[in-house]
Image 1 (cartoon, rainbow, N blue to C red):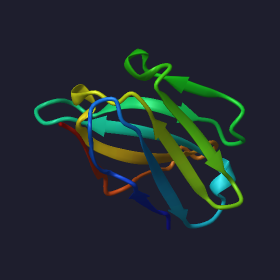
Image 2: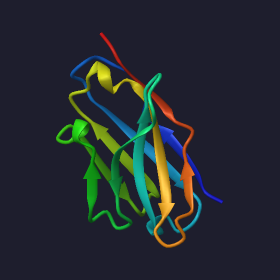
Image 3: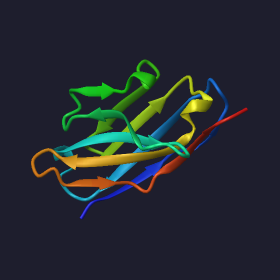
Image 4: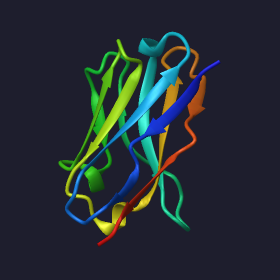
Length: 118
């Protein structure tokens, strides 16, 4: 069984930065592709960034390219999302996602709220 726990959300002013962390509780973290999603009120959940098992490849949605960076530490079973130049439109609940590279078994974290406001 896998559990994902996100940390690092909060209130930040426009132009500010936050780093989200997601700790993977379970086995075989290095066999999972990891992603960050977000869901704003009244909107669908959207993929922001994804990173492969070894961290060698990443993808980003256009709206966060150049501002957000996904990374992982396979020794700490943790994936990160560094968010810079935050804007009010980035206000949402941010979710961590894991899917096994072979079985495609997938898991979600509980979400962490990010609010960008002055």
